[in-house]
Amino acid sequence: MMDLPKVEVPTIAIAGSTQRFPVRRIFCVGQNYADHAREMGSNPDREQPFFFSKPADAVVESGAVLPFPRQTNNLHHEVELVVALGAGGSDVSAQDAAAMVFGHAVGIDLTRRDLQADAKAKGRPWDMAKGFDASAPVGALTPGAPPAAGAITLRVNGDLRQNGDLSQMIWNVAEVISTLSTYVALAPGDLIFTGTPAGVGPIQPGETVVAEISGTAPVEIRFTA
View 1 (cartoon, rainbow, N blue to C red):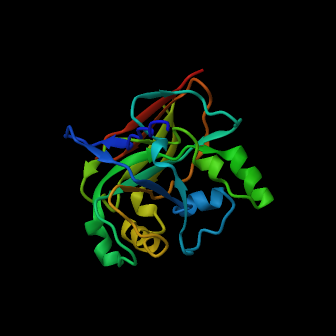
View 2: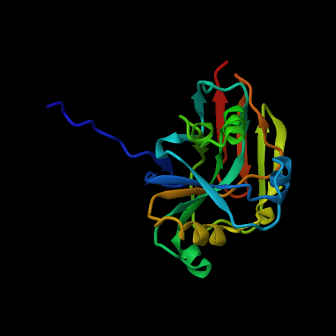
């Protein structure tokens, strides 16, 4: 019999600590900013949030130099507030959700937009548009719950592409956690990407992307030419 493979648990840095946060799963909220919903051709009314997933090992750290993703000619950036859960549960109330948050960070939901558009047009799942290798860059976690307001920005080669505020989220962090917990039993180690403001757009080979949220460590990635 072959030896069993050794599988490492993905982790992300914690600001001011030598410890690292183990990542169990990654959930993402779709179209949680009205202006982004509009630019994607959707109705920005306060409908029930919807979710998709990325694999845990899609996480990459700030400073990473990444090969440009395969199978795409239209890679897009989406800056997002990321919350990391230190506790879990099912059917959690919004009032109890804040106590589940271990920390927060800025992340980038990288998207193969052409694959996503094709899958949508054909009524197929779009896992490969969102859940590919290195598709979830995340900065170091700041312990504690995130602020309700604060600038959230993304630059490509120094040019400002996305410029929003956390207060613009349609569903706040507690509501997102509460709603997600009605679909799955949340657990310590889960990450939740909470949506992106308007301004999503393409990244080219060789470009550097920097995402920031006020009060947190930035995340910076560069793609090889």
